Length: 516
Image (cartoon, rainbow, N blue to C red; front, top):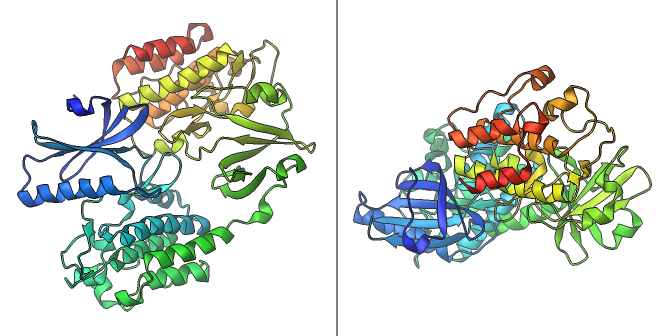
């Protein structure tokens, strides 16, 4: 049973538990047309000192306004049940989860990605320090990934306002990221945040901490050198890990250096040449890691956008009807502003700026309420497309984008086509193709999109696909997702019916989820 929020926060409802900490519980929620995280802190068992600490966190959090700091929307103390409630933007996981995934998969961070994280966290620290605030507990667990792809700093439980002396003496933080002066219980200043960022940068480069234990922090003269990294990056991290606080750069110094390096890191020689008709309107900035044909760009007004370069379609495709593609307008369907065929076998597609995907949100276990909300948004998008006579043909976590407020947006319309009985080649990954395609049918209808939505729903519930071979797709029924609400399980299995005529329509999926 999820907590019911006080009347003053009635616009928000909780959908799932995200985690529990020392002082309270963090929930996923929704309200005012956006997805949110709601931190509910119980004050009943807190000492006066702990109450004051929590109130201070709330005051600091609500006063901050920076693109690399989680935005706190509301904060209220509820005297009736002795709780404090903070409503903030919902993020898609944290840097610790990302680092663990890479370490387990044996995938090191690129130099470009390390520079980017250092730059964005340093930007947040510079802002805090210039407001005379020190975070004091910087670590990967407290750096989150926003819904639009930014790294943002959160958890201000140990943050402190600098007094006139600019020195503090309270023991605070997490040991692997504590500066030596804190461990020695000496006075310290804002440079402890720079030390912690240096530890994080080193950890991203090596998947290991620069010092094995507290004794090493206190006794070893310096961290082991970074091998195989650019000298500029290694030198900056080494300076941040200076044992003498006076030798460390300021957060502003780190930011300035990271901005210089981050601007020159992308290999622009690998960028495609834009068609002449686009050059005066768009310029490419960076590529996306893991998405080699997608680029961040800016238009003539310096507004960010995405440009994807795809091969000219061989068969039926919405790319052959650019006017109809650009005319699509729905909050759950990606907006296409420009589609240009370069005459060399490539199509350049300009879309709205949504760098974060549903796959990013799937780094953690999603609650039943969150899954139903995502499915409803996607079903609304499909209902709109099917009403326009368009079948998407391929849906996967990477092709579902997330808006600034966490709304799901159907992308991948370069694979879409108008509904037709004409034969066409199967698209997408073989294990995502509907069973009728495995059995020789060669035309896609709306029911194929419902199958794809069912697969996506199954992944959201379990973290995996229901089938491991094409034979299973064609002949085996999907096993019910475990530990999920029965109504959600029933809907998922209905979408995964082998007979396409027995699957619900997108409209029926929307109606079913509206009743929940």
